Length: 120
Ligand SMILES: CC(C)(COP(=O)(O)OP(=O)(O)OC[C@H]1O[C@@H](n2cnc3c(N)ncnc32)[C@H](O)[C@@H]1OP(=O)(O)O)[C@@H](O)C(=O)NCCC(=O)NCCS
Image (cartoon, rainbow, N blue to C red):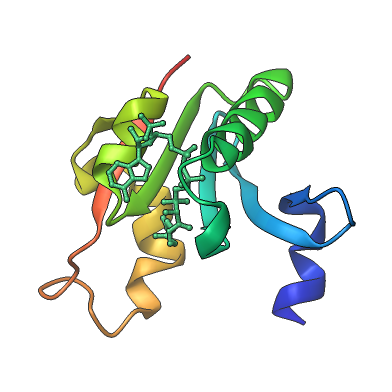
């Protein structure tokens, strides 16, 4: 249910032989807010630009839909900084907190993910 309900959020990167090498989702959150999430690149394909291409595809689609605040919650701050995101205060993302974080056992005291945002 979770997978099928979010299927159209995903960009998928394919190798020449058609095998999946990475994926990333752009989730519409609010009228002007999108989330980049579920980013993953298969280990042996990392550091070749696939992660950047995937996140940039998400950003482009968000811009097309006029979603001009794009955030992520991540441990990979250096990677997201290299794509243009900056660290943000989680309290500036109430839409995320009240729909998702509130159901997380780590919320609020043990949340160790960093909120990052880009406003293209
Ligand atoms: C984070 C991840 C998606 C990066 O994918 P990638 O395809 O290797 O990234 P790119 O090659 O596009 O990297 C672009 C730039 O980001 C930076 N970068 C990438 N991975 C990094 C890392 N682990 N630490 C620090 N900087 C990193 C580098 O500056 C890189 O530029 P370079 O070409 O000079 O090395 C990948 O390491 C991954 O799948 N990790 C496990 C899952 C994960 O943590 N997902 C994020 C969840 S929010």
